[in-house]
Length: 286
Image (tube, rainbow, N blue to C red; front, side):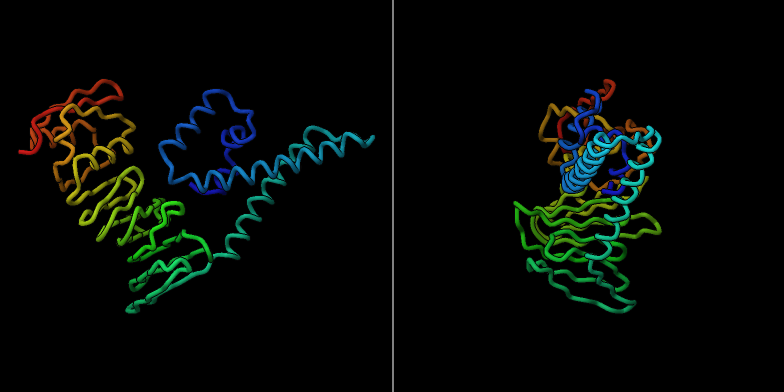
C-alpha cells in the first residue's frame, strides 16, 4: 500500500470526504484497526485528498460567480487533472527528499540516522530514507538495525516486496529480494512486528507472496500469521498451546486444514472449523 494508490482509490477518497456508504466506512475503520502499520500512509493520503477537495470547491465557487457555464465533462476533466498533478507532485516531492545509501558487491557500510539508529548495510544493499524521519525503504539487500527505541515514534522499514517491519525495540536483520519477492526478518534483541506477526529475540520469519516460513516461533505467532493470510479468527480454549515453540512453513494457496492437521500431529491439538472461526483445543506441547 502506498499514497499514490490511495489517491486513485475511489472508495478511500469517498471515505476521507465523508461521502462513502456505511459499508465502505466500516471497511476502512476495520482496516485501520487491524493494520496500524499502514496508518501513516493512510493519514498522508487523507491530507492530500482533502486538500484536493478544498481546491476543487474553491474553483466551483469562483465559477458560480461567473456568467460562463462549464459542462459536467469539463469538471470531470479538471478533477482528473488535479488528481494527476497531485500524484505527480507527490512523486516529485518524495524523490527530491529521499536520500539513497548504496553498497556495492563486497562492500559493507555503517550508517547512522539522525535519531542515532545504527544501520549496517551488507554488500549489494540499497536503501532510501527521509532526513529527520524514522522510516527506511529497503529496496534490495540485507540491513542490520540497532534501533534507538521511541514508543511515540516507531522506527519502520518498508521493503520493496511490500512488507512493513516495525521496531518494538531493538536489534534485527531485514533482507528484501525484489526479484524472488522474498522478505526475511531475524530478531537478535527485543521485539519487531511484520504484518500481524510479532517476532522476539531468536525468532525468524521468511515471507514471499505465496509462502511463509517461521523459525523458532510460538504457536501464537503462527496463528497470527494464519489469521492474516486466510482471513480467519482463532478461538483458543487451552492457552498453554499458545506458548509451544514451532518451526514450520506453509503455502498461502494450501488449504488451512492441512496446516492444522500438521499441528494436530505434532502438538496433539484438536480443531473445529466454523466458517471464518476456528476453535483450537488440546493438551498443549507433547
